[in-house]
Amino acid sequence: MNHPKNQKLAAVFLIFTFLCGVALIIPPVTQRMAYYLEQIQIRIRYWIKPPERAIFVPNEQVAAIVFATLQPTYLALSKLPPQMEETGVQASTQPVLPTPALIAVTPTPLPPKVVLEGVRYQSQHGLWNYCAPANLAMALSYWGWQGDRMDTGRYLKPLDDDKNVMPYEMENYVIDKTSYGVIYRYGGTLSLLKSLVAQGFPVLLETGVYIRGATTGKLSWTGHYTLVTGYDESDQVFITQDSYYQPDYMVDYQDLLGEWRSFNYVFMVIYPPERQAEIDSILEDAYADLAASALTALQKANEEVMRLSQIDRFFAMFNRGSSYVWLQDYASAAASYDEAFRLYPSLPEDRRPWRIMWYQTGPYFAYYYSGRYQDVINLANQTLNIHDPFLEESYYWRGRAKYALGDTEGALKDIEESLKLHEGFIPSVEFLQEIGGSN
Image (cartoon, rainbow, N blue to C red):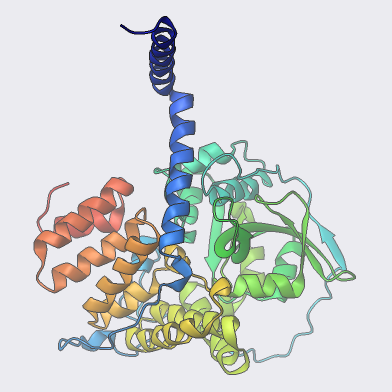
């Protein structure tokens, strides 16, 4: 016969279990529990397989089929790389390349200090990986746009777990959803930043920073957007609206240069269409279009590869590869990425940018279009299996490479998975149609 005390304990346990079950079906509680469970899983995964120890080793086995149009051709571009097609850039058989000035012009001295007012600050906190929506909303707010990070976020991050927003996706938002003009370019300089700000144009940058993870407690490299709204020559600092830290966040000139290097010095400017002539005047020939800026960035990367060391040299090598991709010299791009990946194991583990394939897909272009399909697959496998599965670009490129090697079934699975993660992802939709799949 059960003791009355035991019966009471059993009843209490049943009631508690029932209440827990009821609580778990309440959306806010379910979301909070899911968050904590995910953090526990992340901590366990990082402990078992520290991502900074994962090393990609290129096969360096070039496929037998070599496309003549994919040899070094940046002086005779006739077809845009796929990433340029995705951004809506118009093809040209005669790209605009930087040309030396024939007449020496004395530049107008810049003010010693500039502070642009009018940006409505947006924090990225409270939502996963929300620096891109927050920063784009801030950049637009300067010109009177009345939306916020949720407006930009619904477009830029259809999946909450999406790890990155590409610059061209932000450009597309401005074109599709606003009446403003927008440009983004590579190979920027500190003096160009100051010139743009001094003329009243905030500048959005993609940078790489070391942030202490809330889950792991360790500093690790991660991509991060920030908005430059001023500078001060006396203190040698830029004034930024940093969605992770705070408004009016000061960054030393040289610190920003190092952080900016990891994304090939990419920058974006939003502006009223009637100010297009001012933008063109500041950018001049070196940044006339994306192809011109890629050549400018390539020249900069070549110089830095010779001068820098360790992590800075790794990024310079990576940037050289990315610039070659834009210039359609895929063989040279692949060779540059090979150099970067060979240097990677020599970097201190706590400094390795192991998330780099979340944000930059240039190696996929380079290896795929130079016929190195197995390298595409191996790099995507590492990125997805060790780092994170929520990367539609990695599924897309792995699918393309599998198809090129005759694995149609595997290709379809990967392309369909990319569309689950990013509904309507244009490259996947178009490739699925090309190979006769259904969406």
